[in-house]
Length: 217
Image (cartoon, rainbow, N blue to C red):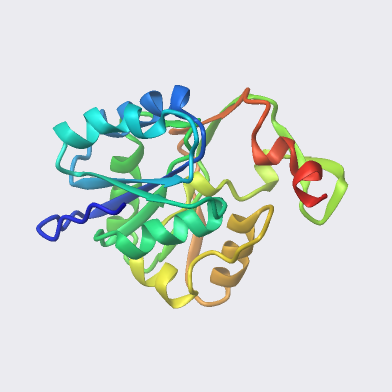
């Protein structure tokens, strides 16, 4: 099910893919609603959840005209983000993990940076990490590396043309965000920012970054 609002022409589209995270979605959604910068839409892509995700989202979807809900069969996080990009309307596109949250000035600071640096096409970085700060290295899954060495997908914030011209994310089981970054950096101007306004929760035991060995089997 897709709800599309043609009259909605926001500056920023926030894409939130969700799969069986109903108990965490309220925190993530509220963090978007509390943004200082309000010219945005939130697109929630339900990736075939079997829990009560739809029920949790429905009151927000009813009360807020800039919250859009899409449901499709389970396809994985990268294809869900692509689906969100395809129906989004914003000039800029960014993301939010279903178990993560924004600080109130998250979008505002990134919009200001992009406006002050018109030659920059895509930015990433700027996190507060809660929990385990190490993840499996995409190049060697027998090792772990610190998250400061990684591209954290939720912090990607870029002009729509960036995502359209590279064809979005590829359907990879792990680190699809890093793959997109690698494809972008030679074609566009990409910079890392350091204002830590993306709150990256690492407490969950069923995240992709903690269970990649099971996914690859």
